[in-house]
Image (tube, rainbow over all chains, first blue to last red; front, side, top):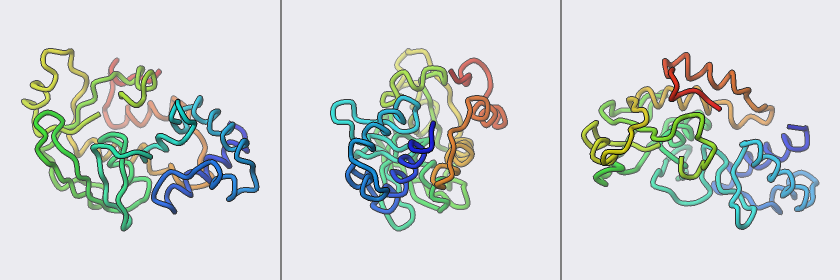
Length: 147
Length: 69
């Protein structure tokens, strides 16, 4: 990963946190004296290296892990904002990335009962819940949206 | 990568499929903080697979299921 791609990635993440949503390529370009084409090319390289995930149809940000650019079943209240996480792991990851406490709102993936988890000092308040990962680690990136 | 109320709910959701791996939500939080806490600083560099594997190993997430590609 070269310096330009690291710069594009850093600007993308910084803007995601500042805006509370995925930035557009034009917004990232404007923050770093780059062209929109530079940013999209950089995003494509970063996507190939699993540093972020693009929407295949539009080359817009789909995931800047642990953040999701689209609504999901994992809503996180952290740093005075609502965020969407890509999965349960990423929901805790948003608190971790922001270095703040937070609240995760989701539902049991089986029965649909609402679940709320408060995260304080990196620990969940309800230890009874379980996390299940269906896909083995070696195949996580075969289809990251499904994983 | 989802949350469930209990083992019973996981088994019901699997419906006879081969299970993956189940960990406590406390372990998940520990894993997430080890994995994601370095993601935002501008000086971030990609982590080598070996370092990611070391995080899993340190938390006891070992065995074929947790072997990264």
